[in-house]
Length: 243
Length: 251
Picture 1 (cartoon, rainbow over the protein chains, first blue to last red):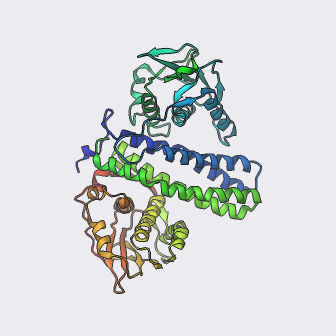
Picture 2: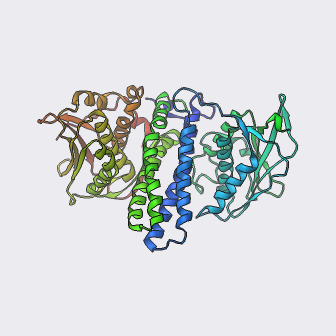
Picture 3: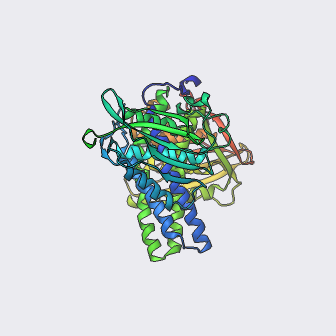
């Protein structure tokens, strides 16, 4: 086999979702491993004060793994299309905040729900949107430690090909993304020159976000946050009957 | 992703990963019960098992991602006693073996020189070999791990002896001699592929032979690598090469 056969190109063809799904499985698996290590250390030191919290993290990670397996399109050439249902962005963000508050080891990042009131229901795959938000929040934690991460949305809907789309943002107060990297960071396995050696990762989290958003007919991009830092914006369809 | 081989391997992995994850999750619920009962000794043992299981799963996913991103198979090697690696393998497969009334025996001496290997991946390779044997033959019986070190060739000879006479050695041998790309059409070949790829990355090979009693034996000649722990990056093209020939003869 020639070496070129093993290479990955940014715009390669079918089957790319396989690598995204494989990479996505790492997240709950890593959370599970982290929880098990914490449990191991606690038991070794005879300290069970946080045992219920750690067990919840372990069990939640296991449940996430199972949910991802259930949603995984494993037989066939193409990915299963998203299951579009009415879902509440408020509820999804609250779930993330809940998990965040229960996390045993969270970096020094403040996570804030800044969703305006009165947003319509999304018409989206709830599991995918949850993972999308988690990916963006974890991305902010990784690249903008010691920062404030805000989840927000614009009250005005965008219209695209007759569909109403909600614009949702995950904004951090970190160093931001240089202009020349703003397209590249959504490419498979891309690692910025500043982060390749300092931040652990495969460079697949943002491509997965892009893939998921595009599965919903939306768009994702990065911009400057109003107060500095990076603003990751994406659009998702809303339920027409909730308008 | 351009390589059909890697794409198919990834598909195989994703389609087969449900079983080990389900197995892993089955250990989490009893852990909760142990935690609530305050049985911390048992909880500690169960969590150690779940941790090793999770880390092996992660290492297999990372193996493929490293190949896709960097074109290398990455080994994080350390000095290990083969005896303890085999013990981990046996522990990982105890429940599965018991379900088929198979008994696993670790007869690897604990005084061999240290081997240098990627513990998680190497354990996974041995787990994969056991999975292959369990799937190939549902009969009850005994499986034995043995090992010796050959000073002349500076190799360990690790052997997995399946004493059950009804194992179809010819069919198994064919699966271990078929080029990797030709194995990807069938889902049940994932464990064969994983074991061969990981062993190749360690400079070893999986050889299969019949035993005089009618069973089969895997023989794995594992070279003694430099004793310094390190991260090794082996070109994936070399590991996945269909022309790769496991040339070493049995000892």
